Length: 268
Image (cartoon, rainbow, N blue to C red; front, side):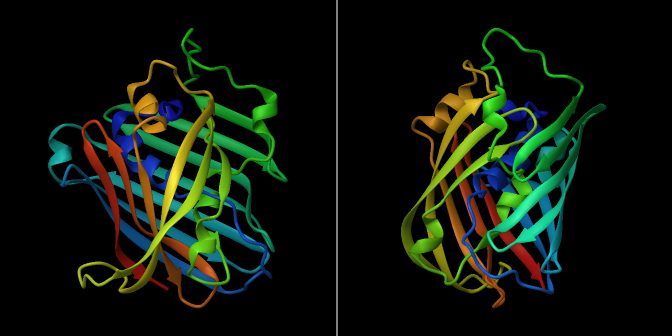
């Protein structure tokens, strides 16, 4: 997913959550949902980041926020942070983004993305500093900006039950620099038992296939690895009885080792 074109630290933080994005089931709008989930991120078994994601849904409107920072030994190599916000309509079909902003800092370098949507159509995107369109970058086309959602809006899953049906999904995502598709399939049911995590109970494990569409670089080692022999696995857990489901764990294989995201704490 090299099309994010963020500093290396930002790639490690955002990609697992992009991997969790997919379509939502048609359900009645639900009111009064409020939760904060905190995740630990590791690469090859070494802790590299902490991520907090908040969700508030009134039944008609939603807002989500993501805050991430480099932690552990990774701070000896680089320092960085990410702040992202998403807001829009809470519809019977799920969360539909109307605005998405992201700010990242890696060392002394700042990077920003500002997106606006109308009924899943991109109406504006501003990337600062601008992306250089090298010859090996697949050009974004207007037709690629139809029927898309932002990363955070697509992160939350709506469903009737924790079962194989949650994995039968496909999401079209636009990050401001890259458009890609995520297609999911059911793997198996599992159980979370570790007392060191923020949830114990039943889980559904989904396989996720990543397909770049545009905005990515054809020479990107990570993109080519991930769409080829790479793997993405997402475990989902229920958020109370509200009909929402959130990632309990995400795992992405990379040439540097497995990138793992695990739910450490859940407040609701």
